[in-house]
Length: 260
Image (cartoon, rainbow, N blue to C red; front, side, top):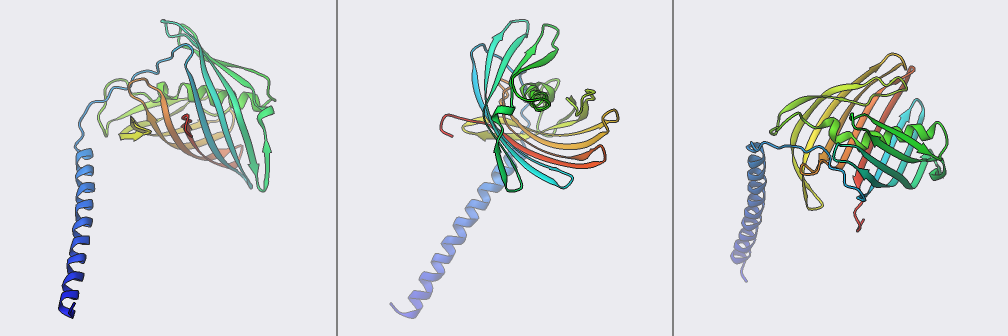
């Protein structure tokens, strides 16, 4: 092979690579353009509860309070024990693994966590109760479970929404006095997770709890199955102060499938 043929082959290979890259970039651009033109109205169903239904969840929380940094990994089983056509339900959450890490020290904390029962009555009021665990840890994690059970109803829009639409939300606040957080949710788009098409919401909320001296802002991304109202994935970042101490927290939550 002479030098001119070698140069020609190299040039052809280079042109082919550029063509492949160009096709990939064009595909991405077309996908983004299609997403930007999605004007489909999406209706998010209120969460559907079915007696006997079981789900498994995992969450990783990173907490920075003052000079202390800690991490908590939890897995739990959620069982819907009872439902009624009027909207009442009873749901049981049982922690399966729980590990806390502070600095270089790691500790199994499963014995400190309770079994949590979350209930909604005919009037729509949601409460919880605990069995076992250690106070005040039991109460804190019962509040966490209750808020996660009802989060999709909390963030759901009042009617059909299109990508880019915004609406006001009110959620569970921080502290014993029950001050609520307020903010705004946006339908950011759709996302396929483990083969399931979900709607993705971005939510920004604030709480100013003067009674407990807590002030905070949080940014949350929530993926919901629009057909059932079930939470599929959720991540959040929170910044604020509690009794004069800076607090930063982030977490990642997801469903645990049989192959994970």
